[in-house]
Length: 270
Image (cartoon, rainbow, N blue to C red; front, side):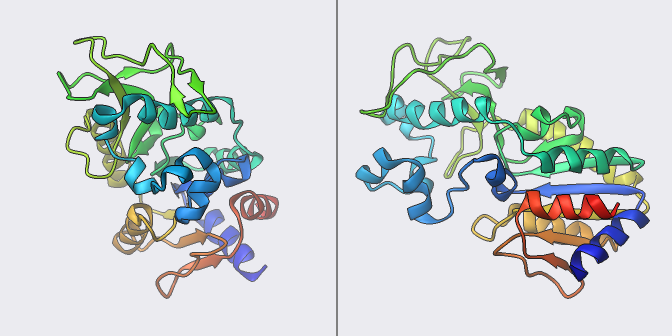
């Protein structure tokens, strides 16, 4: 409880809030975090039968070699994220954010849950892109478009996407999510680059900053490294919420809990 109290005190003192979040942020909404090979396979038993890891599956080569399997995986995730409602921790966090002069969200999540919970889309950087946007697999051009009107139907038993697959509206070939995958040289980063520019503008104006990092693991440490770097640059307190990977630099306020529980407790104190 001591760390919760300390976190609330630092949040009260700060004028600006930076929220950084990894896959653990969505676990309380029922979303898988794909932690470890077994965690991924529990979420996708048909892929377990293939013996393919998350890192191997999240590779753009599948869209060339077996697009129906690729779209079974990403289509299932798209459908899942569309129907998932953000847990109450999102809304309490938004309330905290709105009480400050300004806020920004930096996340490695591609699920769009922050936007769904009401966070301003112009105050979010999705460093790995978004499943709710598409691009050409080649790409034939640098255009990115919304997946809003795209429906992916899946044969769950065979784990194959059914025709028609999402296609590029510019060349007619297969489309893919605008997500940065492993070994990905074809990702069109323009949308995320624009978000990064707005993030930099936010950082340039902050004076009294606090960072709340939620559910960011060590396997892909993009979010953790960003949190620690900004904390050091701006002498900003870092509140790290994570039931497992909760340790950090010496001054880190570590909260060994899940997102929903920790945010709710902090919210009550505020």
